[in-house]
Image 1: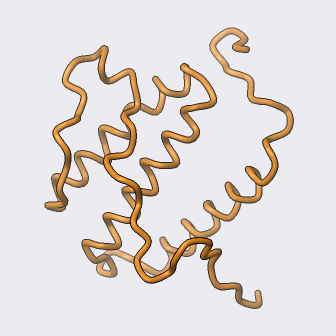
Image 2 (image 1 turned 90 degrees about the vertical axis):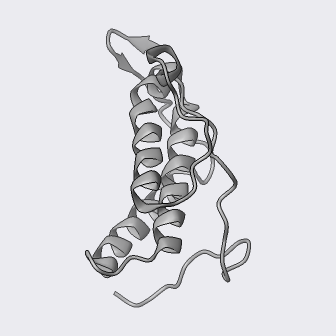
Length: 125
């Protein structure tokens, strides 16, 4: 599946993957526009870090090369949690060999107040 140093992805994504990925990217842009430097709460930061971990794990499932490339992301989100005083499980990689794997998310992301299936608020452009 890999050619040289680069990994090839399938020509077509599984049903719904491209749409959900696009929606995640748009939502991230909207959040960045709205939040600004002083607009964060601990709960919001924790939700964003959970989302980053979940997306990292999902993309890493596309191949072992991606798992290794994305390992730094899992380490960074753990560091951000510690910096912000958000609880971190004691499952951080300690050796370079352990750092080559992306740990599973520490806990399932919580959805406060929106419930399962929430797809965002649509507004006119």
